[in-house]
Image (cartoon, rainbow, N blue to C red; front, side, top):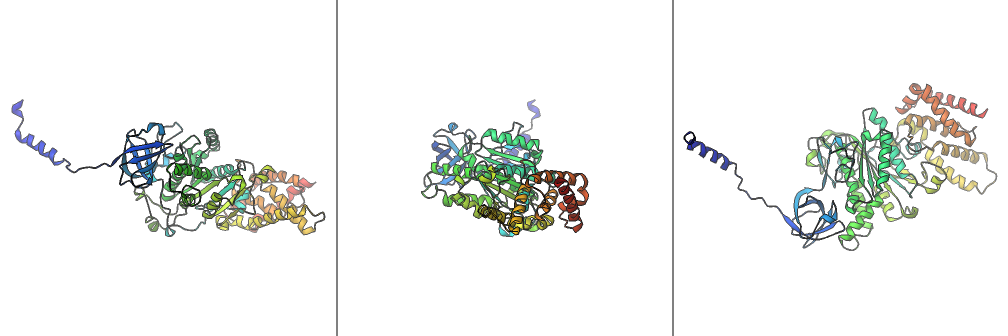
Length: 528
């Protein structure tokens, strides 16, 4: 056997192995845990660590660098505090804190680290690493909002329209229907999904009860909305760090769809709880006085989060050069995508002029203000028309809606004012009495039950009857019957000649003539 081995063969093998030998040295920067408390770790030895960098402990738990001090690094834990002990070894990863996103994330419930919470196994597909924090697209890479994002709610689509790429704040006290508006908007995207042009929805639940999130996911499943929705959950039981990072994870998932040329909608429910979580973290980190208080820091936090919602320019060659593009997206960028943001804020005791509400109002493109009094009177959505506004306005509406509902907002705001004064007056002149009557009836028309969004064509047809004063002969208690009968008739006989053309933005006089005839016959039937 020994006779068969040639010395030259041995030397060839040795040479081959030596050729592949890497003699360069690899340095790995490691540190030791000095102190751990309430989800925050102080680490000694990581001299070159960068803010926002991901660190890894010897048991696999991750942390994100937040404070860079002279002799130590302050990091927030993305896992349980009890597993971290003093003296543990920590190493730098050299990566910025990020989340792995793919198309297969749709329909799943995940935590802010992108780990599944729904028990359906790991998320597969072509995973793309998206940074949690990222600079918003610059001015050159954006374009104005031109397409509507239909919410399916008459009061909003007609008076406070939301466009694709817009940031519209939903603000109001607790139990005024803020989440309901966001969920109705997500459910209403079913039509776009069926038409093959989906708007991918990301619902970020921050600091809510686990049971609340579970019932919400069930509602979305029942309505078929989970087919195009991702739920990011950071419950009230999760650490302050996860509640703080949850909106950033939602924005990163939304950016993945936006930068690959698709449309996405992200709901942050709610940012008041994120501000509280951030304050908790920064107090434990002992940031310099003035930083841990709400004002400047929170303003900056919400600014850099909400600025990431944008409508991307439709020129491919410009979009490819977008600033701060993650390496993982190189070669995958497509122009014309959008990310719409619906942040939710719950002011303390209805104080809209408090610090956080004012901050977020100044960053967003409008706000939907919900009022407890209206909600308690049975109006849903309980929108205060006077102080709600969309700064995008008619650009986020189709032509037919713009024509029909152009003056509705002003009319309803005037009606509210008139109503307040009419309480002190016994005899009203005919014009004031007519304006009040029309306002009251429009108010009833704008009411809408939860989880029943209406297609835009039906909204336009219905609002035409109200805004043109075609219901003047009806009593107030007959308006709801009229609405039900009118919609049934339209769905049965006038899909092709009224509803579909209106949905496409058509404003031909013949269409409105049909609506007037049908409206007149129903009113006649109800008044006999």
